[in-house]
Structures are given as structure tokens and as C-alpha cells.
Image (cartoon, rainbow, N blue to C red; front, side):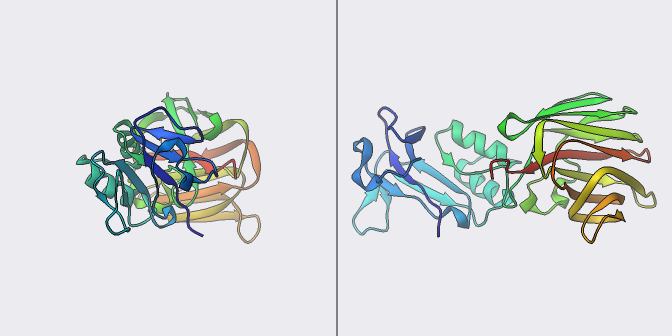
Length: 286
């Protein structure tokens, strides 16, 4: 079954049961939009399961439609897939801008009257927390539902880093951040991450753990399941799918801490310059 919304060109007051972005009204609830709520003409948007959608108004009312002889005041562009790169490509084409992240594209589009359904969850359903501050020994940030995180490093050695190092190494569907503040680590020590409320199956992504010729083991306080990795091996098997240690040699990986937790720690056993780390989770409303 496809996923789509209804759209209308609306320059009047916001219509009950809809969202308003610029001159676009967007369906929210399950009312029958063929009855023209708000006294405006509604049009069904494209299937959002096939790619991210951008909707825009066309005030002259001359946008072509599939109905012969009928034009509309709304139009649509759809990305070729549900990946960040595909969304950025269509956003660049629509806007004439050059965006480096889906979040930046979505913000510009909304601010300029376009509706879009970009989600930082990505097609995998992963969402990465936004880090707001990093010092040598502590960091803090926030994620979905205002879930906060505080991170400490027993040996110091943390710095802010823009996005994850070589973020394009990770598969696009995981949505690993290209921009925003993330955590850089360069010292052996114990990371402790504390969430403001219990979180189910938190995710941690690591980029550039170890170096060619330098193996760096990282010990984890709770069993985890590897989600994806490159140049990473796993040790201390708990069962056939879980481990409590991984070792990187210029390694990139994403792990899931299984279960519901409020705190997790990682012992980074070898100093190096440097790796980056970000924290996240799958939709906590699911």
C-alpha cells in the first residue's frame, strides 16, 4: 500500500486538520479531502515510499496534471530513492542551491515555502543525536522526544568534529551524519554515555578506529550486535550474534546495544589520532 498526502494551494487562514508550509496546505488527519475542506482544490501527492517528495505551489494554476485539460496550483518532485544523496540531488535541482546534507536541504526548502518529507531517520530508521557541546572530558546532546545524552571521557582527549570522519564510507541508508557537531576522540580511556531516560536498542557509530598497522580494541559494557562494519573484527562472543569487544584497524562500524538501557560505557584501549563517534537509536515511538 502506497504512502501519500493531499495538498492544496491555500493563501488564506490555515485549514483545520492540515499543516501549512508557505502557500501549501498538507493533509494530516483522515478526513475526506475530495470534499474540498477549506474551500480549496486538493490534489493527491506522489507515493512517498518510492522516494523523498518535494511539493511546491504554482500560483498561476497552470501546472500540468494527469487529468486532460486540467491544471493545478501545486506541483511535485520526487527523489529516485529514499537515500540522503538522492534527496540532496532533487533538492539541489529544485532550489538551485548546493546542499551538503539532507537536514540543510530540508531546512532551506521549508523556509522558502516548499514542503518535503525528508527524515533524518533515513531508510534504515536510524536517527543520530545532535551533539551541542564537546570539551576534552565531556559532551552533551539531544535526540528524538527530547532524549538527552551526556558523555564523559575519563582521560579527556575529546574535541568537536564536523560530521563523522569520512561519513560517505558508511552506507547511505544508515544516515550517518555528514554535518553538525560530532565527537572526536584521541585518548585511551573510558567513555560513559548516559541517556536522560531509558532508550531501547541505542546505536553507536565509530569512524576511523585504529590505523593501518595499529589495531585499537574497544571494550563495551553491554552485549552488542554488529549492524555494519569495515576493517573491524569482533571479540568476546556472548552468543552467535552478540559481542562485548570490537577491534578496528582504520575501522568503521555501527553497533546496537541490545535491550533497554540508560547508561553504557566503552573502554578505548589505545590512544590514536583520531576516531569520531556518534550516538543514536531507532525510532523510540515505534
